[in-house]
Every structure is written in structure tokens, then in C-alpha cells.
Image (cartoon, rainbow, N blue to C red):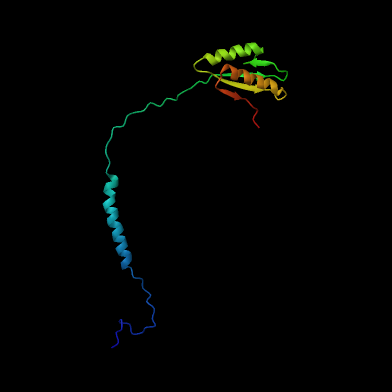
Length: 136
């Protein structure tokens, strides 16, 4: 008994695409889409508080100690002796909110002069110490 599939010539290639599986997949996707859309669009109405946007301006107080090339100590442009520098640094260290001390050393100043200013700040108990450099 010969069971043929209805094709008389077995050498012919089937040139039609079977779209039934594609339609099945599309229907499943359509059902999923129909079920999920109401869930996505369902919202709860809330009355949100209004915010006041005001920038927080924090004024940072800084003191610049400059060391000139001859070793002169300048406190915000005013020349000081080492004893006067120690006294001013101790007064700043006693404050609750210490300003930042910025040390600017001249390129040709001796390194020891800058180290003396750093040591004076450390002895006084200054917590915020920075250096000012020339950007490249």
C-alpha cells in the first residue's frame, strides 16, 4: 500500500510558507497585550506636595597665607612676622567654624618658608589647610 500525501510528483518543492504558527504567536501576543494595557494605565491619583527650590548658598571663609620669594609672610596681603602668624592662627583655631587656610608659595621661595607656615598651622590646630597652585 502506498500512502501518498496527495502529491503526484515527489520531486516538487513546496513553495508556500505555512503561516499558521505565525498567526498563533501573534494571537498570543495580542491577548497578552490586551491583558497588560489596563494594568499599565491604571494609576492612583496623589496630591503631591509643592517644593520650594532655593539654592543653598554656603559662603566658605578662606584666609590666604602667601609666602614671597624673600620669605615674607603675607596674611591676605598684610605682611606678618612668624609670632603674629602664630597668634592669628591660634585665634582662628579657637573658632568653632574654622575657615580654610590656603597657602600660596612663590615659585622662587625657599621650601623651608612654606614648611614653617604649614607647621605653624599644624601647631595651632587648623583642620582645613590647602595649597594654591598655578594651573597648567
